[in-house]
Amino acid sequence: MKGWLFFKLAAQNLLRFRRRTLLVGVTLILCGGVLVFNDSLGNGIEAQLLRNLVFLQTGHLTLSPSADPAAAGDPGRWQRPPPALLDFLRHRRDLAFHPRLETAVMVQARGETITRAFLIGLDPVRESGSLSPLLPVRTGTPLQALKPGALLLSEEYARRLKIRPGDPVTLTVHTSAQGLRMMDFELGGIFRKAAPWQEFFIFAPLPAVQELLAVPDRIGSLRIILTEPQALDRIQRELTTFLKRQHPAWEVKNFRETGGFSLGIVQANRFSIVLMDALLLSVAGLGISLLILLSIQLRLPELRILSLLGTSPGWLRTLIVLEALLLGLTFGTAGVLLGTAIAQFLHHGGITVSSLPLTYLLGSNLLIPVVRWSGPLKALGLILGLGLVSAILPLWQSRRYGFLI
Image 1 (cartoon, helix red, strand yellow):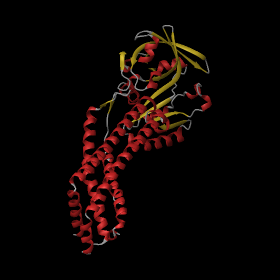
Image 2 (cartoon, rainbow, N blue to C red; image 1 turned 60 degrees about the horizontal axis):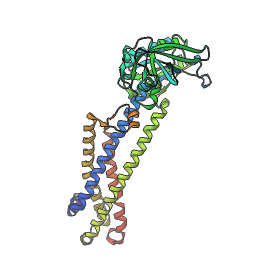
Image 3 (cartoon, rainbow, N blue to C red; image 1 turned 90 degrees about the vertical axis):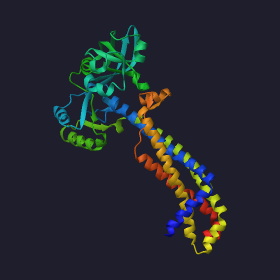
Image 4 (cartoon, one colour; image 1 turned 180 degrees about the vertical axis):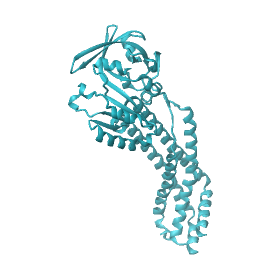
């Protein structure tokens, strides 16, 4: 009963100073909204970066021969996948696997030469579903219809080589076993890159790359795409156990182990969001502290009367804390709901990105905010915790009044 009475007193005290309460309340609403919205932006950037990383480069998991670093460029790092391993993967319904063969090459066409390029041999039909949305073909043959002797180049490389779909392209590669090898291809299509470094990528059917490298039936790795990414750790443990028992010359790594650059960008983005959130919380906390401190000073006669009527100092301090919590709960909840509503609305239409570097990293000119329900709950918890911390300054300043000690 006494607790309910003090709760009502706290609410009445806040209503006495409506303008100041409203000013602090607006700050808390903005704080809660921005906390949720920032979190949704961070989630969206992370999701789009990791999507590009997984589908373009690493897969959720990568199976590859355990290569000696000193053997880089040696055909020994390209192996025939063990039939038992392929059978094991085929019988699993929780994943799909795609063979890849990758190597550095030199590109020549119309008298022009590019010495830095990265050739990726793959199965065009099986991988088109994940790659085509990320690297759309602007001109020529789409990935799924790529002919055996054709390849895909980026817009930048096609422009530098002054070639169009249907023109011949010569690829040159150095192998330790057979020295320089050359092979003529036809430019099948031209794709738009999703990130700056992807202008170096050249995509070609796997058999043609195997012929260029003179390694028939060999691959460099198997990219594993999971139907349920949340089962990543469990499936990695199962694959590791199978490989140790059946094929110790092969190893499995997840995208967190192989995608260091993209994950570094995600971590840097999260750190910048944390700094921004800390600044917002500091401003909101200062506003709560000043409002409560002013409220105490203007209500000194009332607090003295409560003390004379037998109210203990502990209950008076509780009253101050209740005011801070009530501020955070009321306006913080409103801000969290507002931020969630805005993020959900923008999730369907996306946010147009004008920054070219960010567009490259996202693989699109649209940033899609993603609300995970842990975000609003975390924001509300931070604001309530902020209310508790903000009551410390008024309580410390009030030590001069003996009835609050």
